[in-house]
Amino acid sequence: MMRRMRGWWVWAAAAALSLCLLSAAPERTAHLVVLHINDTHGALLPETRADGSVAGGVARVATLARQVREQAPGRVLFLHAGDVLSRGGPLTVESGGVTDLQALEQAGIDVFTPGNGDFYFGLDNLLRVSGAVRVPFIHANIARVTPEGPEPIFASHVILEAAGLRVGVLGLGEVRMDHPSARGLTLRGAAEVARERITELREQVDVLIVLSHLGEIADRMLAASVLGIDLIVGGHSHSKLDRPVQVVHPGTPSCTWIVQAGDLSRFVGRVDIEAEQHEAGWRITRVGGRLMPVDGSVEEAPDIRKFLEDHQERLAQVVGRNPAELPNAREGQDTVGQFAAEAVLRATGAEVALLGRDAFDAGLPAGPVTLADVYRIHPWRSPVLVAQLNAEQIRQAREELDLLVAGAEVTPGQTYAVAVDGFTLGGAPLLREAPFTDSGLRLDEVLIGSIRARSPAGE
Ligand SMILES: [Zn+2]
Image (cartoon, rainbow, N blue to C red; front, side, top):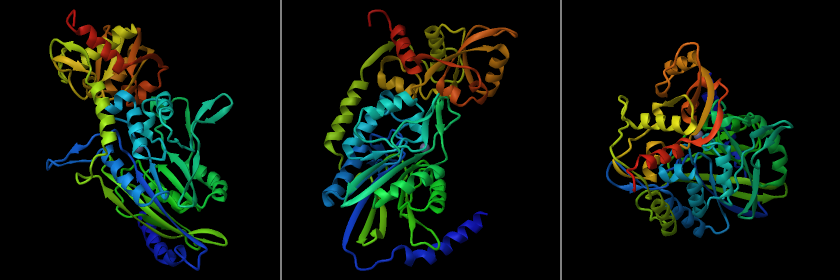
């Protein structure tokens, strides 16, 4: 099947090259530049590479984008194809992605489509992030379940003007529906939604872009099965496509191009779209593109550097003093995980607390503990959830997962109020079936409170 598909691509590409990029005497011409980035996953700050060089970071991304805008004023759009979250450094986790979107907005992004990772901190958090910036969030195939039926959360698309062209950008994405953060959401198939939307949108625009967090393979399927998309700016699969990929539609003069720019702010993609206006409307005559490396030769934009430094200063505030180190060890009572499990037990009043060992990335250092330390220990903003479970369910959960347990000895036949964090629940298919309710607490906040309480008196 795969081999046949590949053969088809090659044949189709050869057959349609001339059809797709046809040209005749135009009334007007236009040159649009689309910049794109995806799956930044909290990579706000530069990274130090194996050879000691420093590269990446949103301040360098901004410099590249601003240079292109200066060279092509009024002709540039900058799109982000999703996944600012799920993990990331303390700046990202502590702000729930607000710092990321604000920095990216300063860097000049025009549109954002939320990726699956952007839903992991919950819909309320995502709406808080979108409310903190002017950048429009678009997503056509996710909705909220209401008694009246599915209700859109974000606009499906935006229409922007650039290079004298009306450019439609339609957002399509993927959401992990079995994750507890997806409760109350409903996801429709991207191709079906695209087919519905594109028919009407095509009438209103000269160039149609899908901003996709579906992944490269799904993008290729979408390009092959839905007519009318000029360009798919992709994400999710973290694919580093050095050149735009062309997908032709045999027997028609249309084709679709696919781009994606790796991940972690290491590249900004650039697509050059040339178009000619004829009596029948605008027609794309040439598409070219490449990835611009965000390397050490690019200066950091000073305003964004300063913006991030100010936030780092805030994260350097001391939340408490820890009398003795608690390592992120898998064994023993004096570990950060056990400390957290006891803290959850106290905060919720539950009888048993179950936390996945994977929920912790670092130990709690001795001495002053900063906000940044807390978000290095647990790089999530997990809600704490509570449910009544019987001893058998607790036993099954402990078999299914590597869990830290605090609280009562579990006796067969008994039922217990059990507290779990959302991150752990996300990886526990058996536990997810139980009727957990949100306690209103978050694990990171519980940790901060317990670190304060652990501090020696008077500090
Ligand atoms: Zn993703």
